[in-house]
Image 1 (cartoon, rainbow, N blue to C red):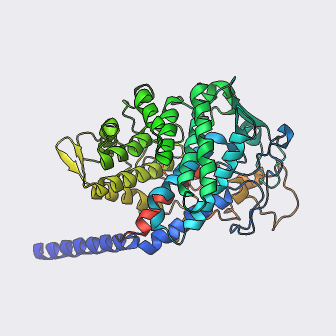
Image 2 (image 1 turned 90 degrees about the horizontal axis):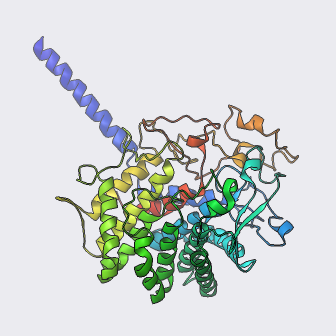
Image 3 (image 1 turned 120 degrees about the vertical axis):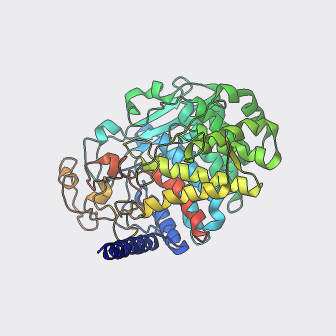
Length: 496
């Protein structure tokens, strides 16, 4: 009897082992899978476009929208991106999206040869808009089109919207160093993307970046103080504007190699956050990203002025790696980095880009990270990033992809006006502000698939409700996708 029990137990163990192997094989993504996800992650941006759509538009359920944006103020503010599931053009997250989309192309563009033109087009769509916003009126930066408080009272397609397209700006009298310096960063990073393919456009981007940065630095203040309830609580600058000033100067230095920006970083770094260890990277807080960006100068040229940024980059990395003395990040039981209940995947995708970018810098210079007595190699960073990327693509306890349109199972009830309402093609007559709410509360899947959108994601216990009304989990955003483009490009060019 005992021998039978042991034999039975052995069979059970073998069965579990086999199931485990089968499960691993289910989610061992190939370079082809990453390439498909990369293509879709870029395609998503076409669903967020505002303005007159080009003949090359691939998400054809979208139509022209916001064609008179800025006209009542005698400026042209047509174009750009809607940030998430509503119809407002918020300047701070749009600029950050542009910076990270450009950074993805700068670091990993060589790994996306079949998608490089689509990626550049995605960068240009917002860079064109930011150029307009920065150059339309001297001493002014236009930072928002649409009143979020009024917009959120409606559930309507962008093609139908009839809420006031109020324009908001920062100026010498009402400063916004945070949004202005982020805009400068976006324009500078974009200038690098187009340096070879469109030199004159690249030069215009960089020259504008320098002017906008001067404006941000000379007239200091937070746009949250200048605009109050217009931007808060939606995109309040909780971290202040100092981090954006250092981030903006760093990107202009990277793009121009102008020594005056290096001098600025050296002179102002300590008062702008260079000495801070910060463990989050988002549209609000740029400190961790700045450290990684500037560490390149130390690793490549052993530039003493950048040594501090390498040290803080190491601290940031150590905080993410379990088992090291500096570890302090929170992960779900399924292994997902967890920062907050609302739109958590934005932190996962931004962290993944930083891990892979730093791994690239370390590898190129034959350097590792020391976390106390533990040595953390570039490969460890890549492994950690792959876990996060794979989790989003479907290797998770829920066995669902959090990228719309990728895999066999993905969210169907996305918190997104254009995606959840019938398209203009299928329903040509207008759907009014209040009539649209029936679609918000409907249990039916979204009629228009917002291909490539990464949504807010699961909670701290890996639980996810595919509920359109639960915007914390089901709403996509441009700044969730932007850094993921770089991460997917990296893995699409690297075998498992």
